[in-house]
Structure formats: C-alpha cells, structure tokens
Image 1: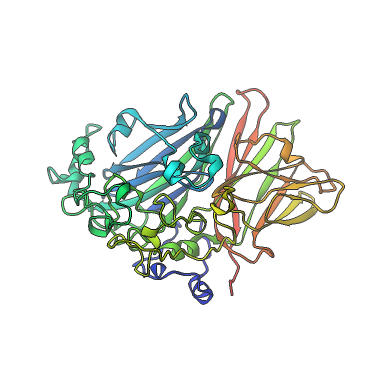
Image 2: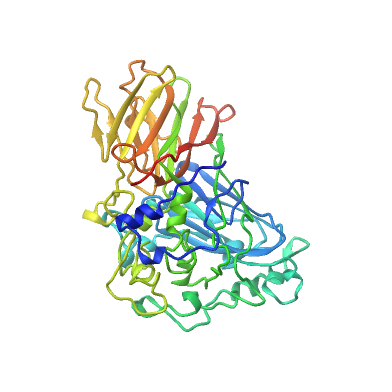
Length: 511
C-alpha cells in the first residue's frame, strides 16, 4: 500500500523543533515501501498475554548476504527488552516465535539453523529482560523492574550491513561462514565471534567517555572487508508476523510496516555488546548515535487520522481491539540525558554534531521538539505521555458522536456517562464497544484503553471509527497498526480471528 507523504522539515525548522543532528542529508530518504518488503520493518504488536504467541518469519529476497537487527520494545515507553542479530545468506529465511516462560517473561525460540548473534539465541532461545527500565536505567517508579511490562509491545527489524552476491563464495569470509550447505551454515561460531568489540573497552562506569570505534561501533570484525559493508538493497526483507492463541483456537496474520531505503549507503554494523547493541535505531539515518533520520521517518508515515471498523457483541462472541503504535514517539518523550537506555540521551543528542560518540558529552542535551504534544514519560513520575486525540464514532447507519480528550474523560452529556481514554503509550491497544471499560480485551492486553460507544442512539454493536490527532484534528503523527477482530463461540474448533490494517489520511499541513 502506498501512502502520500508530506514534508515536515520546513515547518519544524520554522518552529525551532529540529536539532542540528536531524539535518544530515540522506542519500535516499526512507519511505513506506510499495512492494511489501523493506530494508527495515516494524511489526506493530507482539504479545505473550494469556496464552498468546507471536510468530515471526523474515525472508531475504535478494542474492546478497546481510546481517539484520531484531529488537523487541515493551509497549509503554519502548525500552529494549531483547536485542540480537541474525546473519542471512542469499535467499535465506529465518523463523522464530515468542511465548511466555514460567515467570511471565517473553522467550524467543527458533528451530531455524541460520546464524544468530549471539549463537545461543539459535541453540537455546533468548529470554527478554527488564534491565532497560530497572534500577540505574529506570524511567518510572511504579514499573521499575516490573516484568509484566514486557508482556506486550512491538518489534523492529533493521538491516545493519550487506555483502554483494558472490561474497559467500570466498572461503573464510563471514558471508561464507553464514552460507547454508545442506541446510546448515558453514560456521556460525565464526560469525558470532566476529561481533565482539575490537576498539578498546567501555562500561557504564565510563559514562561521559567517548564510545570507541568507527562511528561508535566498537569496530567488530563483522564490519568491513570480508564481512558486511554498507546497505545497498532498497527493499531486501519481507517480514511476516502472526498472533496465535492455540488454546482458544484464534489466530491472525499481522501486516508489518515495511520501509524502503532505510540506511542506504550506511554501514550500521555494531558489536553485539553494551552499549554498541543500542545502535542502530529506526532513525539512525546517516550516522550511528544520532537521530538524523527522524525527519524522514516522520515524513514517511505521518498520518492525521486513523480509520477502521469496530464490532462488539457478547451474544455472538464478537470483539475488536485497535492497535496503534507510534514507533518513534520515544525519541520525543523518553528524555534522560545520562541514561543510555533513554531514546533521547546525551550520546545521541549532545551538542550540535548529531551524536557525541566521538567526544565526551556535556550538558547541552538537544532533543527534537515534541510533535506529540505530550509531557515526557518521566514527567511527574506517572509513566504516561498522553496524546491529544479526537474520536469520531459511527454505527453502520450514519449515527455518530465525537469526543476530544487528552486524558481519561467522562462525556459531558449524560445520560449515559461514557468513558473515553486517551493514548498514553508507545504501543496502544484500544477497545471500542458499548461499555468497553467493562469488557475483556480481545487480545487480553494488560494496557488496553477504552472507548465507550454508549452515546450512539442506535445502541449498535458494530460500526466504524476515526481517530484524529491534535485538539482540532490538525496534527500528523507517525503511526502504524491494525485491528484485531475475534469471534469467540466458546468452542476452539469454531473460533476465529482476523487482523485488518488501518486506513490513514495524511492531508494535513503544519504551519
């Protein structure tokens, strides 16, 4: 699907909302792909709640070899909870699934033989952890170290580096080591060891010191000649995802957001060790440890409205959840200069150089202007960054009502009283239904928000809705997502689910 784009750069400059680090020019600006593949992809939602599993399938559609970053973000503030790399040989496919362990943590497992970095991910799976929002890295008192915060979120898959077709034929090169022979790579141990830092050491105690290595990469052997160089393919990756609840007999495929030309001409390979594995991000643009691609990303998926259907009928087992994910909200609202796990920190945003990995940082933190119009996640220690939104709710016979809110609201026109929740997280789940606040989320989400449709005079159980951004629907925000609709008859052999991508409008001009 192609979307019209709009240009925010001039408007943001005029408003003084762009730091100098965002002004670096890209060889090719990132766009929403028009062919269903990309050099970066966002899976808008994963979940392990109440028996749900999330399935992943990543295909390298090219004859080139490449290494990709797989990163799980928790829903509230998008802190990283699992981060590793996968080395894909030409035309390779990598598959995995995410489910809950006995303690309620997400565990990613795979039966695929492709090389992972670290190799232990392939051989024994990987358990997500709460380090990025705990203790020294905490962003909110009430959820400091709370493992339930990891139970849902979204996934980034980013191309880091690439080697041209034929590189895998050179014996003892990394592309050769990752190449499958009779279904098994030549030497995954060699691939794994090539992602250790070779540019000195750096530890949390060294905060304030330069991050070593070219572009702050740590200079792993995986970066450069005989390994992986700059990204050269516009749309190499096809990413499929599914949500499955086997015990309930409900599942659906989820459309990923594929982005073309991410990182073109850049080498984003980093050591898979702290702090290097924090890079690249979706907005690395032309440089590690920067947000030079934030403006292009906002241009690419900035949308003023989101529209889709809703259905809720307890008698027929129908229920609908909306998923709305803002993949770059954290760069505007997660602000903590001396916290490396914060999206906007001194290493990405100090001074005027577009990242400070080459020098010690000082106190001149320059985060981008907050286009979301909300407080930071850390403000008042309340763990929320609410967005001003408007809800237009319709039944199927043109009946409607509108509510605008930037917080939990009771409609001013009783009877009846209607609960309307705002969007407060990076990844949001919204129930739209009569008495929605009293209903279970179709996805069993622990953070589901509620929009009651009780004001519809028809008392309808079905309809559609449009969510607009800004007090008057005059803002445009980078958003992606889908609706998940279930029919639960109480019989797993008859139950089913479906996921449908949202419709968007981008016709907003910011003065």
